[in-house]
Every structure is written in structure tokens, then in C-alpha cells.
View 1 (cartoon, helix red, strand yellow):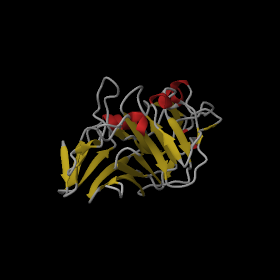
View 2 (cartoon, rainbow, N blue to C red):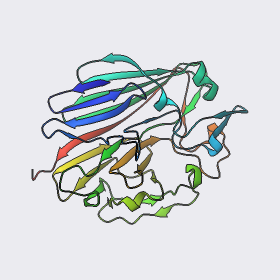
View 3 (tube, rainbow, N blue to C red):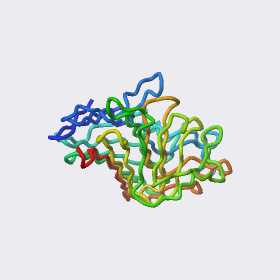
Length: 294
């Protein structure tokens, strides 16, 4: 395990999957991450690469060849190299190899940069195409935050509040995790999604191209809050395992296949194209805050 620390917060990351395990506010000793209880969901913040979500029949087609990948790809199960580290930052590296090329025919370097900045954690994805031809990929996050955040509050006391006016259209998931072809309107009041366990009984809430670039997890019964930034991520997932005490806020550059997709990788919705020797970077962040009343 790798632990980062500053005067305000600390973070622990597992080199397997470069997965964020703990995010602790030192003054309160609150760990904002889900405990990865396997009775509900045994992960805390898996990295999604080189696909996000499910592929139709778990396959994609590229240049006439068919390749098989599990939901969310393989990075979350691979051990990353620690490329560099300081007291408050670390860079993890995953390189393509013969095993990866059998299921994803591209040559790449995939870096995750974790950096602490006062009460904030920044997580940057950096994909480098080290091959001689263009590559196609998706990448995203799946961090799970504990709910409730404070003793004496319940799951239903919390809500997600977006920072822009939203007319939320949810894209339902069909069997197998594929995206349905028609969205459904999600009722919102004051740009808030109230959290309930039943909200996720039909799988994740999937949104495309929101106006917002941040969302706050909060309750009117406590001053403890978490602000999540996802600028330049065109898709957002909100999910929890059935009856579990967490909520995932998932920034995606990519999305599961549609039920009507033809399985061609280059025609996949949200796919990122990267020319030879070029870099792709996106950053999401978490800010641990307490309301002004505290």
C-alpha cells in the first residue's frame, strides 16, 4: 500500500489496480471511502480502462478481428508499477504487454497520478499511445464514498447537489449492462438527487453531457460534505450496490455499449481516439469540506 499525507488529509492507494482505498480527514478521522465490504461490493475505487462499462456480448471488433474484454476492462486487476512518489503524490504506471495485446491490440502507457492539495485529492489519468498507429480506448473512475458521513445520520438524509441547472435524463441499463436507446426523465428539485437505497435497485443512473462539472454529497443534518469535480468527463454514473452504505460517483470518458451497437470499436459511443505518440489527460478531484455553519 502507498500512503500520501499532508497537514489536512491522507490517502492510501493499492498498487493492484492503482485503487484508492482510504481518504481520511485528519481532524475528524473520517474515512470518506467505502470500506470495500465484500458482502456488498468488495472494491472502493476501481480504475476503468481500456473500456468503461459492458461491451455487447463482451466483445469488440477492430480491423475485422474480434476481441473479448470484461466489463470495465482489465486495468483494475493489474498491478501497477510505482513510477515516482513524494510525501503527497504518487504516479502509477501500467504498460501494454503480450497479455494485454491479446485482448486489446494497442501499445500504450497508462499512468495514474494521485496528488494531495490541502483538503483536495486530484486524480489524473494519462494515456500515452506508444505505438505507431492510432489507438481507441475509454477510461473512467468508480470511486465509492461512504454514506452516511457522520454518526447520527442515515443514508436517506443525504443528497447529491449539482452545481448547474440540470434537466436530468437517465439512460437505463438493459440486461448485461448495455445502454437502452431511449432515456428516462429523473425528477429533480433544486438540482438535487435524494439518496435512497431503492434508487439503485435498477442498476446505475447514467447521464450524458451534463451542464454541471461538480456535485456535492451532503446532508442538511451534518456539516460534513464532499465535493466531487469531473470537468471534461462527458459521462457520469451514479451507483450503489443493493442496500449498501455508499454511493459511487463515476466520471467517464466512455460509456457502455448501446443495445443496438454494431460492436465496431471505432464507432463506439464516447470512444477516444489517440494518434501515435500522443497523450490524453483527464483529472477528477475530491474536496473534503464542511459547511460555513461549522
